Amino acid sequence: MLFESLGVATGLVYGPYHYTDKLGPKFLGLVPYLIAVAWYMMMYPSFVMAEYLIPSSWTGAKRLLSVAAIGGLIMTAWDVVMDPIMVASNYWVWEVQGAFFGVPLQNYWGWWLTVFTTFVLYLLVTRNRPSVKEAGFDRLAIAAFMITGYANVINALTDDLGGPALAGFLALTPWVIMAWVSISKNSTGKAN
Image 1: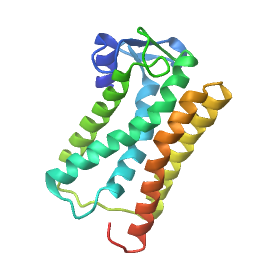
Image 2 (image 1 turned 30 degrees about the horizontal axis):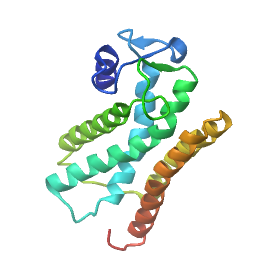
Image 3 (image 1 turned 180 degrees about the vertical axis):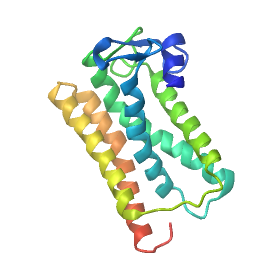
């Protein structure tokens, strides 16, 4: 909510935009509360996927920064298709014409930065806790990411947004495949 509120108030994080009233009540009159739920809903699977993609032999700052950076890329891949859909549906409005189907490229940098920062803080706070990977549960997180991401691709297609649908499919698919392969290797005891 901090990044989103700062972004809406100043245009510095994602570019100049504002939310319409279609998503309900807003925090500080700026950001719908539902946005925080959506961020969490996709951040968790993005984090799980990043954890599996970074070799378990990497430790310390190298692992922390790598998980945060890759997690940010995974989450941003989801936004490639989601943002143009939400703009076309008038959930938020860009105050400038962006280069990517009306969305400013700064938005994607802001998404990555938001996720990267959040994951770095989370990993610093939890650094003394053992990391527990539960392949069965983690597969559900990846499946949730897939269902949500590909549902957005289908939604884009049905809304005549073929460009964002194709871009989203191409942005999401490598991460999904790599995470699924990595979790399968990890759960069968092979080195990550």
